[in-house]
Image (cartoon, rainbow, N blue to C red; front, side, top):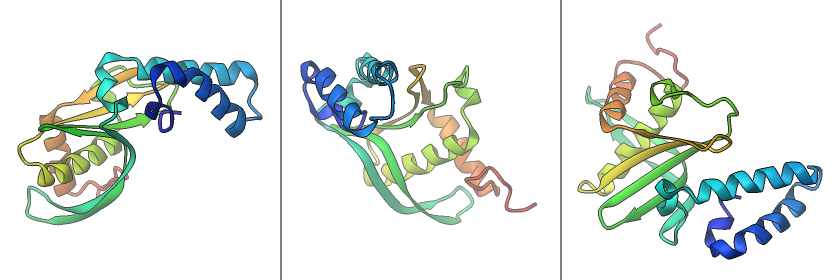
Length: 173
């Protein structure tokens, strides 16, 4: 829903979402489909997320390149950004999570997610060095939105340089 509905005007999203869910999730009952649609529409209506669902945003954006870590080591990175907004010196990248039990604070966001966001932000920084980059981790079921601070992203890159893998394991163990 979050991939398909944003291209429509807000007044068209309810009916389109109902049609999409009926076609793509016919085994869900009406209550479950209505709940999913309600959650998606409420999330899209959050003011902090408005740029991510506007006309200058993209869904499921592939990203690939090389990141140079603080220790001089280079890492190949490839992945997919759930939602990406780029305009006039501002970049917002968002990773959506469906967990029914989201973290209570940004400090509890899983390390793997932090590492992923740090690598993606670093790649985007290479393409737009003057841009302000915001990294959001969004728990859709609870509408919790965490912005990852630049210092936290730098710390995650430092963890990679010191041997932490994207699986949270140490390469040196």
